[in-house]
Image 1: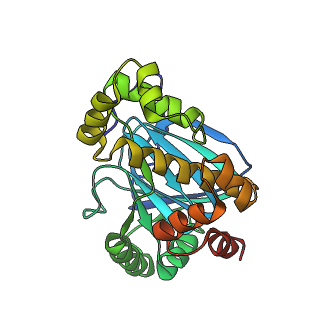
Image 2: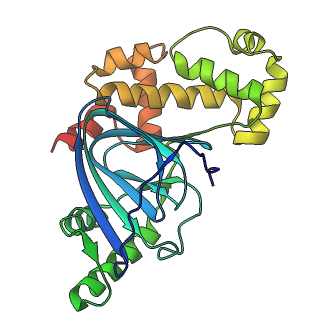
Length: 262
């Protein structure tokens, strides 16, 4: 769980009688929600657009038809890529018991998507109302059955490794060698490789590949053509990017963002 920051805004969302409260937002491209935290568990769903959520543990990319689970009191910020339709559910802590106490990206089924959108039409839900109790039971079951998606960049703790992540994220498409980047950050590539595996469970090369893929996803959401996004993110060719995208999300980027516009 992210450590509490004294300058992070506390944004209370609890409701004395409600198990679930909801909010719906429409945001423009590059809109930023500064660091804050809630006293509730939170599910942030993108029905349109792409969101990047940052915590002290890493970065979490939320493209359409995905959601990020944010446990209570986790300090986080959000940046929008493209026009974003955000639907948020706030749960009484521990009400959703089978999801982890750390952030994760969840794959949202067609049924769960419709449930989230429907639930967000009512500000507060309680088990005291029979029809709300029944629907909450279905929502809870579907949510706890959702599979996770590897749409995150874990953040290492060592200051040298952190400097490397910041260099890569500042310009994901840069073709400089990893050895040179590591040297510029005050350590050998061998040392940084060891730190990345220990602290992120990813090799440095795999982390950089993931950073490029997620950067390209954000560019496309902001209006870039697939070819331009792939090249700007550092891929040798658009086809190389499409292969990586399909492996992660199950279809081509053109098809994926076409579904987003439906």
